[in-house]
Amino acid sequence: MTDAPPAARRLLLVHAHPDDESIGNGATMAKYAAEGAHVTLVTCTLGEEGEVIPPGLAHLAADRDDTLGQHRIGELADAMKQLGVTDHRFLGGPGRYRDSGMMGVPSNERPGAFWQADLDEAAEHLAAVVREVRPQVLVTYDTNGGYGHPDHIQAHRVAMRGAELAQRPGGGGEPHAVEKIYWNCMPHSVLQEGFDRLRAAGEEGPFGAVASADDVPGVVPDDEVTAEIDGSSYAARKSAAMAAHATQIAVDGPFFALSNDLGQPLIGHEYYRLVHGTSGAADGARETDLFAGVDEGAGVDEAAGSGRGE
Image 1 (cartoon, rainbow, N blue to C red):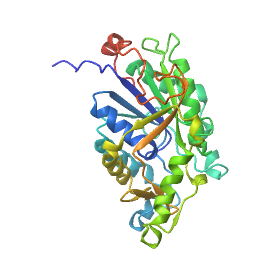
Image 2 (tube, one colour):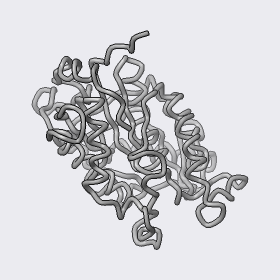
Image 3 (cartoon, rainbow, N blue to C red):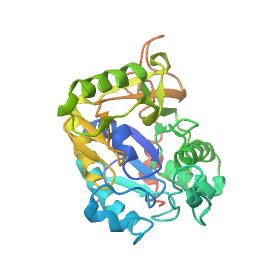
Image 4 (cartoon, one colour):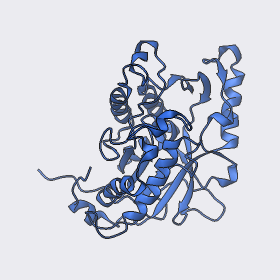
């Protein structure tokens, strides 16, 4: 029995913790997976330091049983089933890097914390995946990790450095250059409209209060957005994937909340900034396809002959 031929379109996403991918890119991932693209997710930590929403699972937390990371492996697997994504890896293997917690807390200094990782060592783990999968498109966070979380910042650094290292000979596998790199973002007007809908629900709203723009990663002025993916047909899959991360996310219809119980809109369109490569859209227009303008034949022969490296 032979392996299936490699997909013409190959998308790699780099995220810090389980659940980040579903919140930020769930509709995009489901859309491209359904359309036959090879979607690869690399998650950098197990999310061991996360707060736990369901009271019945509170014992999993880091200050009690410290078994949340193992539990979240299962949540992530369930989320990937909802999105139709079959290729998921943890950076360096499950548990290689531990969740660092929010910026400035003692767990930032814990041995093995992702924030303390040697950048080139961690990036070489990712470069191995890039050489194997040979993605044309890579998605990650901006330089501030969207909102300043140390693991998000480190995931950005690892993604960018890993893409650079993957182009160099050595390290196993043929060198590969990613054609386009995008950073996640959220246009301010879209977020404001979603908040307006949530506030309009008033006392009928599902959560204790409404979040502010400061609670949402990567909010940017509308004119900084360069790509908009219409994932509205996959919004139900995104919602189901988010709900699979039950320790971290409460989903209620078109809204959700994290452990702070502040409502946010669940948005089916997802937004990006192109930071490397050439836009496939007309001047001044947003791309509607992350693969616009890429060479869909490039790297297929090499990918067909490569072995799984993680």
